[in-house]
Length: 204
Length: 204
Image 1: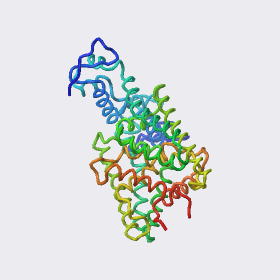
Image 2: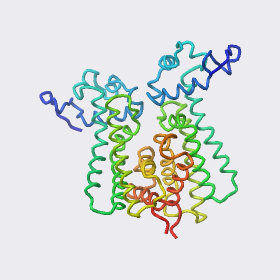
Image 3: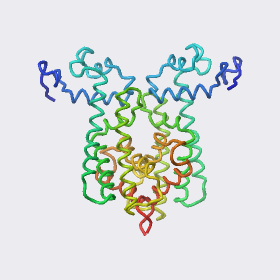
Image 4: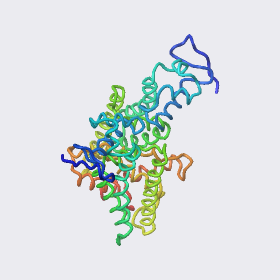
């Protein structure tokens, strides 16, 4: 991998051998393996094979790494929800689009979403990210309610907990799904959608 | 809360004001809030309001606290699976019993299950607990396969990823379900079972 020495451009910090994206990827791996709180900038520097002071040429603080990493997960999810809101289909079609797109983003951004899902809300930054997650729960729950009002999905389920259960199944993908496992990503997506909309019982 | 001074009984360690169960509860809260790796015995002692040396009267090491805490989640789940295996009903009935019982145990043992679900496998003890979790995945996946072979559930879903998706929805309960929220525990259980077996689509 090639990278450029960018001492004169503070917005695009870098050191030979690493760009900010690579530093971010390696940092997120470390956060996921040992926990954000337990991963010091010193440990990150060791992992990158650079000095502790060199790491600050890439990013001003550990919290900035966390912010950048969380945005890698949150921004695509929020853009997807914007798309859902502009979508002209029925509430059920928009619900399916929401759930399918979430599966895709989770697979594409797996390490970043894992970090997001494990946040504990111990700092202002973590609480803001959790607030953005709750806003997504709210949007999904609203879509469930709309589809219920249109009679497209069953009406005997409370919308907020339904939204949480839907996200529960889909979010689990980051914990166990392997691209080299028995099913490919498209099959997984169809599989989850079938289970959520039609359940385990066979069609009659 | 009362407790007894048990200097002569190392198997039932204690200090005035705390029994081992309370120490365990408070330790698990701290592990869940800050991560196991980031929670030192010193921090735990602070949280308990006792000295660092006093904490060793309750438990020989931090790893012993983790072992005891994980057993609080794993033992009831494993006993439930033993019951499922002795159950004389159809594969579908046993599958429903498995899923319903899991929801109940997760609600009753919430903090301990949260700890289990966040394990990273960094030590031998963590890897052993993850191995026990994988064995539960295997048992659920086998039950899915049996119910498919009996024609009681749809056959177009790969059993192993189906088991993971089922656990995914159910396990999420420890992250978001509140006993004082809009639905009670029995409603939540029925709600999750309806969604898993019959899906979002209305009955025809």
